[in-house]
Length: 383
Image 1 (cartoon, rainbow, N blue to C red):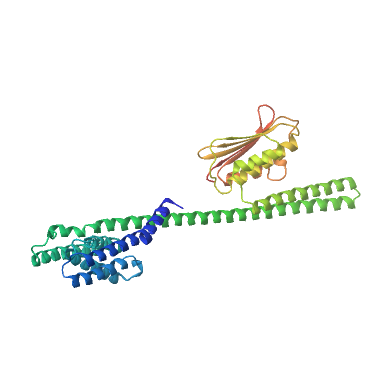
Image 2: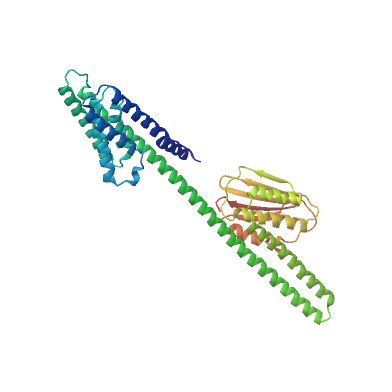
């Protein structure tokens, strides 16, 4: 739960539980005070107290579901009845409701103009009521009329509280929208990745079947001419193509079924399975679509070619993260005459270069100073 959501939850508890309990207790205490203490015009005071109590209880309702005109009438009725009650029961908690009425107007009324108007009405009615009661009962202690005007000030607190609550609600909605947008982008990226893998499945399958068909046609032609040894070699090459295609198909299906690990973890697992040292430089982070997959495929191809063309030579993989780019370097030590890298099957250097170029990067391969071989793929992190 976010900080804004926590604050909103606390305010919800305060609005629905704590404040109603306190206001209800104040109503009870005020009712007891009116019934036991000296008040002016007891019948009128009692009627006004009942009205004020009903308006106070009504303030707990969800006013957002009430029509705007009805809200204004409720706030105005609360303010007027509480203002008139104030000088009639000065020795009780009754004056508190005049201040509460102004605060409720600020909180419940969406229009600031209406809230301020209700607060002004509250203050004017209170000042008039105080003046009238002071004139009718001159020997009674009553509030000065100017002090009675202060009952409208809590409207400012109410407006501030409403603005704060609205700001928190808007921030929480914005955060929720951002989370939904991020989830949508993640789903879209997953769909694009699955589409790419599906295309790769199609390419691998087409390449493998085409190669197998060619080799089998060649074997058939050679066999018909009595060149059985060469025909057997063609069949073995067809089987090798089938095994290689099956392996690549399984890898692609695995990527479809499993959520991809971070690039550094995927390469670490690959190097561990090949018993190859793996090193990471820089700070890992989010990568654009296709970048991680291209680097993993490049590492697989480079390690496979190194084992094929330089058997027994030491191999090593290094992954470097820079602010704008990510670089993969696969090296192996010297071992015999190495054929041209483009002649290998699978991705090959040409495939590496094509994929890297499509992502705005580069791929290079060539002899190392120690007589070994180095493959370097550099891609922008954003893809």
